[in-house]
Image 1 (cartoon, rainbow, N blue to C red):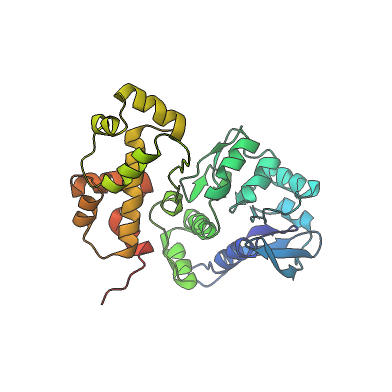
Image 2 (tube, helix red, strand yellow):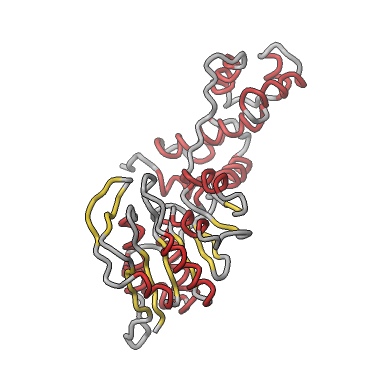
Length: 320
């Protein structure tokens, strides 16, 4: 039977730890035999966390060394203020990887894999809030913050929190096919595969430039974004040339006027999809996209899902 070792360490995220235990323990062959043996492995009793807050003490059922011989080793996330994982945890991971075990991280567990050197030269993901930190701390890792998970063969990483469910379901599907995966999905009450990536959850606020000379123009662009604004028109409002406008925009916002405008339009569209029942065509019109086809294309390109799928997942209003 395939053995899955889930590691514990001080500051481990309780949700991340429980997800692989739940998913893999729920996988059964058609005849009813369990397909995975799940072991929670660690050296000592540890504090388990939720949202960086200690919520209970956890006593692992198996010693840390058992993970070195497992077929799959899962590293849950850890609280932001957790101490660095012990060297013996990194050594167990390296030993398991050298032996050919599948190594999986959930959320910020990617930092542990990176510290063990297992992500060098690989594409990986983590929670979008700390993706830049992972990239800065381990520049040899190709960090992709827009996806729910990355399957890089032997090494697999997931985005934040609930994305661990998506990755564990992907592993069951890969190991045992759609019928077993669908049965597990029904048991844990989730879709076997979620649409889109992590981008749909990321809200990047537009720059706030308190004393910048472009502030009046940015405010005007927000107020007038339902109109077909042009680069020349924006330059006229800023009382400058197009060339100078581009230069000042890059210096003060880090992007171009038209990219800033697209960001603002998508952000307004998100708000309308979440809080109103306006048809997609009216949302497109109010946000200045010109046509619903252009809106659908740009929104999906920017957010990772269609406007309709985004509304279904995030709407804050109730139909009557």
